[in-house]
Image (cartoon, rainbow, N blue to C red; front, side, top):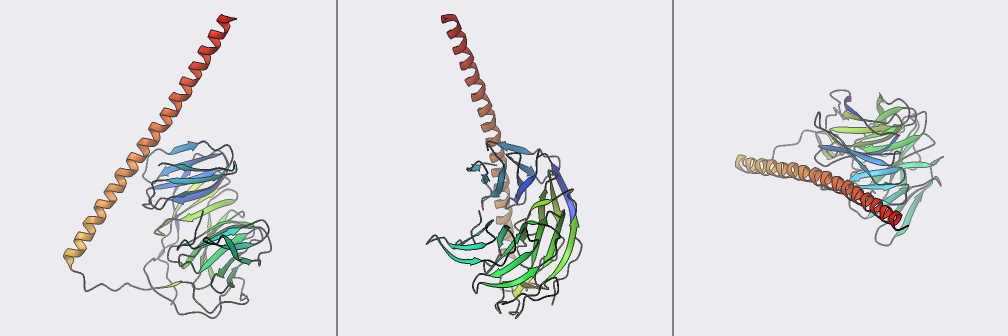
Length: 345
């Protein structure tokens, strides 16, 4: 049975502050913050709460190409064209941390074993440069998009093509799996975002919003929202509006269909962790008292995380002010030395 969508995705908020194209976006675990990287050499952290200020982090000497929150949400990592990686206070491994996937201008997608540091397989089916890759939440397959305007999914256990989509009219710049594994969102230079239903093997939505190429996209950890960035210097936050109550894994399917009506060749008969829409049964073994205790603990942890976020922002502000003070002190010392040299001469 196919998953049913209750409403269309809707634009919730948009942020403007970057001075050049946005290259990467990521949500914090609690969805309270969104980080974005840009060609303007900075990264910005945006608060999802209305009327809260954004923070700009500068230090990179060239374009920031990738940003990501740590699992705890207390650190942000950024990679830049200046050949440095920086960790800030506020790369993808497979979900089990065993494999690394990389994409390249040589038109290949490669799987690497983290322990042996060796390439264990190369996928060479793309007709152009491969711009972005991502692991399915199950870790059993990967998706890749590139300059040939296609999106392809491979089974990493059988090393076979599962699905092939030709839905964009220009370069596919970024993509992200929904946490359920049933949907994939893509961003393209044709200015659109596309949402693919992987269970049905079809295009579900085409979203317009960016003026110019859509360069990056990412789902929040729970899948309720997704964010997109574009060459129009804007970051947009969309509410998913999908019915996200998922249960058991579907039965293995023999073929993975493509949107253009053709079937991918050499499909694996093994499923990739895609789920049916299903109501979760109540756990009759749990008492109401136990549930209340769990809810109370969850609320306490959320409060602690909220306080940590406040402390993190405070430390960040203090660090910025300290940096400004050090710069001013250095400038004063340099001026004093110049004055003394002039008097000596």
